[in-house]
Image 1 (cartoon, rainbow, N blue to C red):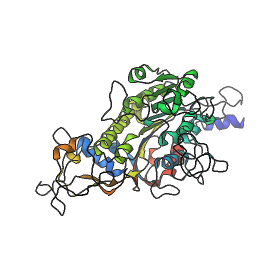
Image 2 (image 1 turned 180 degrees about the vertical axis):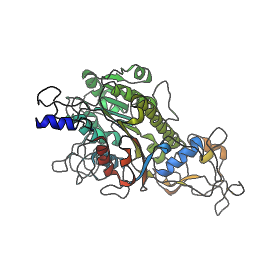
Image 3 (image 1 turned 90 degrees about the horizontal axis):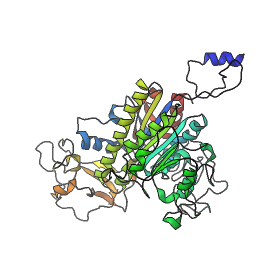
Length: 472
């Protein structure tokens, strides 16, 4: 009787899993979840990158979809042992609520980034945590899977890369990508049993970590995980044509379109690889067909890689592609859930980069053929003439604090080359690869519980706010 009264009292509340029978007795029965969480992560998408991408795409007066999200916050991203984080602990903090050490994925705070032998850093690809080196930290995807939700992971990187891996696996070092891949195969050795019958939607790159060395992959155990996924009733796509034919009836799908990361959006062949927006819509269609709530993580992962290369154009174009995926998702979810009354959308980044905007440039407007815009030279806002350094040489609006293009002697810059896809912005400190930065990142939210996201947060606090928003 008490249980019946409690169920009646909660009938109008947000209840995700309840012990309320549907009949006349007190037999416990699970309530089908009705809430949706879409978590968008722009890898390396610091505030300078966002600003530059806005100017690049729509000019100084324009707005990206991200700019229009009604609730906003700043996020501190430092890790347990680093002032500047890498992707693994930052995404893990979002997904588990735990601050952990650099290179660690979804483990307890004291876990040290080691391989199976206990040696620091990587025995690449294959690794398990040494005994006594931390314990798994349960992820948001795992918790929502246990509560009956559908689940999906979409990325433009390898599906085993740090950000997507932090939703479904637990390793002491992010480079253990063979181990991470095995966590996705239901019933196989190394499977993460917390995933139940499996992640419903898996879309990205990285077939190498699913294939044995004998077939051109990286696996040392002779397993073909793609064949194993097919045997577990996953529909599989390796190219755009097959992707278009993947079922959207609620059955499980996997698409792995490249051996490693997917192409930068600027270089992508649309006949071979789907866009991030297309993958996002496919995931929503599959998950919504299940007629229950779902969790979907979408990563614009190659923003980060272009920034490491100090290739601003590719980074900004991938940011625009990421923004397009958000726009497409909001439109689709508004059709499925008008007003987003049962849907929370969160958009953020895992860390900053060393990108900077130089000088007192006149407004440029958006980038278009013959007009490099924010990718161009600093022309002074007073007279429109090129600004120069102490030696009389021009310089670009965008530059990096460190990276591979450190000029021994500065000189004239060919303005026409600034529009080239391979142009690398100048760096102050010479390094083989540009580093992350430690600045705060932007967070935007819309829909169910979005008002919980405001002010200044740490990345691990976001985990609890998502759960609060949907009543998990």
